[in-house]
Amino acid sequence: MTITKTLADVAAVSLNAVRTLENHGLDYCCGGKQSFDEACLAKGLDPDSVLKEIEGAEASGAQVKDWQTAPLGELVRHIVATHHEYLKLELPALGSRVDKVLAVHGTRDPETLRPMAEVFCALRAEMELHMNKEETILFPFIERYGAAAAQGHPMPAVPFGSIANPIAMMEHEHASAGDALGKIRELTRDYELPPYACRTVQALYAGLQALEADLHVHIHLENNILFPRAIALEGR
Image (tube, rainbow, N blue to C red; front, side):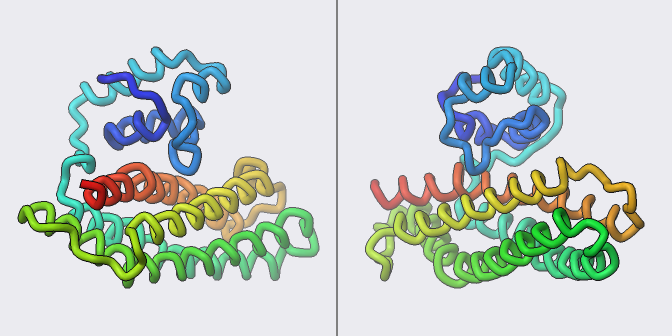
């Protein structure tokens, strides 16, 4: 495996690399521009050992898609079908759990539940609008870029000057989502179940943790693979 400079570079190798970085708490997603070596050392990890762990996962035979070389249109459709659809189903379900837990336990644990509910509601609203902008504006142009490149045609003109402009906006919103996820993790003390945890609280905490894991991969695929590839095509 080629040693690269940033967490995003390492994560972009495969989902096995993503899983390894996530297991070690290395922020390859919104913090993907960090130096890989420095990020490892800051966590008390040996960079070479982490790379060897990734190589071992690659050698285990697990089949993962190489999104660095897959057609851009295929990657866009994967993001929408896998991660956008997940959010469209899971965000309303989590919202219902948040409302129920707040109604039942809000007075018992106001310092955790009320701010957590506020952060989640803001995250949900932002992500729902964010996905709509991607699916109706940005992603169709990226798919056209991929099709033009495959056919050897010039890149199609875009109404926003450069495709880098809406991408910068999406990356800003990704960073905001990452901050919200971090705040939820902080408020829940790393999803530690409180003494009063009923089944709904347990389901809420498990759902929030699963949401965090999925959004990390989702944002990684866009920030570290889809967007750089689209910008590179425009600059040909």
